[in-house]
Image (cartoon, rainbow, N blue to C red; front, side):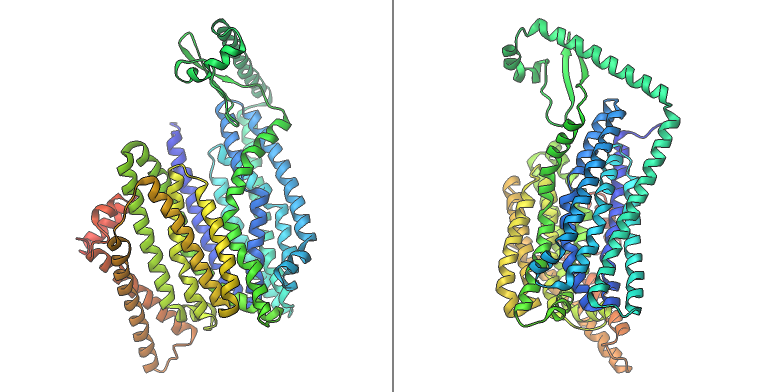
Length: 611
């Protein structure tokens, strides 16, 4: 049976992980709606206060190491040293398990102190409940990295979906039970947070099951004696080539000074090539023939040091987004408390503020999922098409996602009232929801610009942009929340994300020499969004009038659903029609989009809306 090529396995793996990520994010985004519906705005506020803190601790505890495990496992397997890859996962599992236990204890013990920093002791039980998930999640992520290093993506995908499904299911069950018991606000919120604990344990159980199956398969395919013999043969061959290389090198390079002087030239003419951290293969040329030489085995301490050296910078770069989300946790409740609200009122108000978060997350989820298509496309354009191809690819991506973000922001803003009633049962915080909707435009452009920068090799710049935006968010919260309440916090978020988008786009424009006319960037999009907004608003007003005429109050949840869906449908139809008629979307540009573009262009031609 013919085995799939490495490239095919990579594409299959990317598809599997992408699909699992989309399913998991949809489940994660929508689980907050039943949380608010069942627990109320107070529970919702406590949950959204603690969850960003939990995600920050998870990032500190696990981010970077799974990627390091994946990288080094792949390298050792490529060298024919599966025993080393197994040693890597054993060491990393002990390391991640230890980190998980330490951070869980630290988070649990420091919960009252952290609640004091937040300015609300009602969050203490939820912080303690969330800390328990750290016993499982870091180890689970390390095992995912192990299988990814072997290009086996199914275990990661299955565990992601199981983790989210169990998390939401347990959260709802515990919520219903605690509400029947007439539990206190903070107890119900802590119970909801236990869903994350259950999800993490379920995800770890799935990964351990895949590890067991993998080990059983290895024992069948490679009996102990045969495996040991094969490993010994590989080591002997490595030592033989290694010794021959040393002897051949000694004939040409008589001392260390000559070796040092010839290092640079060896990159072109053969000889020694220095191995960087995490690159154990040395390329040598002996008598005109190329060979790969295995480096001597690392000790356990050396492997741990190597993993940490690779993981720590990745972890630091991953902190930007959790820090941005954490700003509201440590500023908004304290600022609201300063305006005279008590602890319970503060959490209720903060819960109302976060109503728009799942809706914005759906838009950013779409941007994140599609952005992975542009990273390889950008890299390919840089290598094959040159600067002009890079500019075209970057310009096309930015234009599309700018339009998507603007459309989402405008649609959520004009339909905020019926959408709020449809999802949450009342119109509390509609003004704040409108302002929070504006974050969709900035966050969408920021995400796609970051992906394009990564495709060009500028991997750290997006993190610095998010850190700068987080600093601005803090300042604007302090300025606006006392005056405008939760609406001020929503405005601060919109401004901060727009800053991050502007910084990323400015750097991208400088790297690619990309230019944009005011008409393409502002005038035409404004025309399209205005037409779309008027259509959505007009349809909503018409639907409300019809419902009122037949004696149905538009404020009921079912009526709000009808008004919202009709408004969304009308807005989407006008958006596509006007964008195509104004030339903002062309058949050529649509066809240039990776994967989905040609199909969309074909559909719009059939509808005769493209020029």
